[in-house]
Length: 101
Image 1 (cartoon, rainbow, N blue to C red):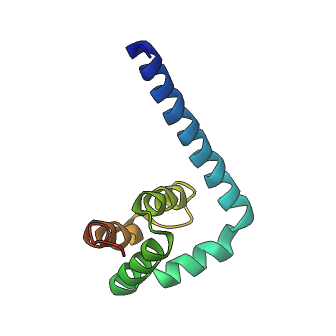
Image 2: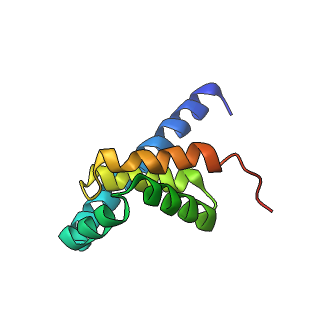
Image 3: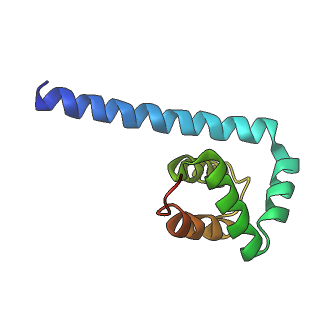
């Protein structure tokens, strides 16, 4: 493959990924609505609780990148406030490097 093919393929992958996140954000707004927003605000109101929930979801999914993408989508759809996501990102930085059996 030439360098041009690699650059075009990489750009296409990023565009498809961003398009998927945008579509997912719209679906969250349509399906979840206010009820999902209230539920997430309640679970991330405390920094400690947000940290624990972030650690548990990352451990279950075993992909901090997927949790980060989901968090960005939730903030983009205004389902989760930006300030409530700090604990999730802090957890990602602390828990992700740990070895998984």
